[in-house]
Image (cartoon, rainbow, N blue to C red; front, top):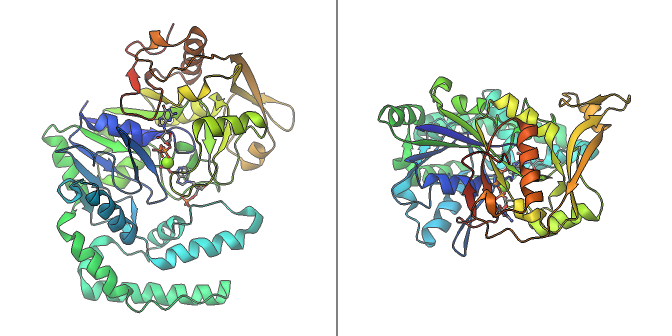
Length: 431
Ligand code: GDP
Ligand code: IMO
Ligand code: MG
């Protein structure tokens, strides 16, 4: 398919990095469209581990282009560090990477503001990654943001930066009683960073449309997950961008009607990092066991991930609201060894009513009790499975049940972090 998208179906960390890296082998162009260095996408090439934060997941493939689209918020220091790290490991990043000049920049004052607002929220904190994502998007929306290409024009950049700094200094002092650290060389430093990247800057929308016109295979790489989407997610416990399929057009300039295939990645259970509702979360030993078996610690911040059973109510909602054509099911191997595995199939609301649709209101979500269907587990190690037929029957039944609940075919199953540990399911998971 010429233009496909792969998004996260849950609260992020579903294994998008691995899936994108695998699909990139058959793509010409991989495009990130949202988020920033809050993302952490893990890719294993043989025994080598790569964690990509800003750079799209086609970067490890020879001859592929990787575009950071205009919907991404760019921390230049983090980007250069990531580039240098990959170059040091032999990846010719600058041959493969392109940046949309319309992407907004994250400055140190955004990162500082992220910390201050979290502190200000107290018990109501979101548990952000502390990377300045929310404040940078807030500036974009309030039209005080600075875009990558603005930096190329010294006068324009000086004017916009000093206006932004004056505003941040006033807000920090008056609202938070904090001083914005003196950063006299921010202007020169940023100019030097952009000078290094100058040859990679393109009009991303024009580039991606031309690639499609030429018949190139394009892969849009989601960051975060549907439940962290600014509008579709568990607001306010969300990130500040549009993480789903709807974010692609705004975040790249690629027209929505030119997307051929909408795909998503979901773990065979659920995880979440940070605060906010998580209906099927397991606070008991089983949750800790999932964390241990799945090595569930954040790829960006190292925080332990909250763990729980697969939530079919949430998954169905995410599938329906993104018009999905297929699902990559990851981390199925992590469930080996459990006597039984649970699936959230409904919620009991505080008033006692049982529902099977995802409630939009935070107050409802906070008081619900999940209705969990227990299914027989399996003991076998499945990390070497090559096809659905290699899976134990109870495991196949579990996958088929998830597929039925989501109403979208499971087109691929991942049974370990390695590139080779993923197989296609030509008929879906139907048994
Ligand atoms: P992303 O943000 O969606 O790219 O996911 P992360 O990289 O943050 O987290 C996914 C974690 O699961 C990484 O450590 C991956 O190496 C790992 N992973 C991916 N697929 C599988 C799988 O099928 N089984 C196991 N056990 N680990 C996996
Ligand atoms: P990938 O792409 C998991 C979470 C944070 C926090 C909330 C808001 O690796 O799946 P932010 O810093 O964006 O303002 O934080 O969103 N979050 C993620 N959780 N995976 C991610 O990205 C995330 N990016 C942000 O933990 O709860
Ligand atoms: Mg991640």
